[in-house]
Amino acid sequence: MLHISAHVTIPDSEIEIHAMRAQGAGGQHVNKVSSAVHLRFDVGASSLPPFFKEELSKLRDSRISGEGVITIKAQQFRSQEQNREDALERLRALIQSVAIPRKKRRPTKPTRSSQHKRLESKKRQSRLKTLRQSIE
Image (cartoon, rainbow, N blue to C red):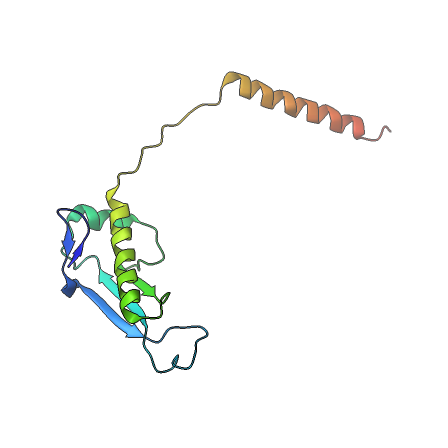
């Protein structure tokens, strides 16, 4: 059972975890031990509340496929158990990040003095360039 918040949990049956061999350089046991973990979580078929499903589908994240499947690969640690915990923690963090409401952007205008300064600098630059031109 993965606890997201006080009211939201994900049962273990909805999370697929497969062990595989880690990539990269290794030692003597690198080709014998399956220490990396591949986690798959189908958002659409899960028991998450509709709010979480909608927000996760809006999220532009490379870990979320077009079908709404979250894929996380953990291979940072040497032990499979630590990689499993790392993958679950990253899934929890991804889902919790969606629960925080985003601040609405309030459009602002540039101040009158900043507009004036910008136009003056443009005029100054224009004058400088006209003086650089050759006289014919």
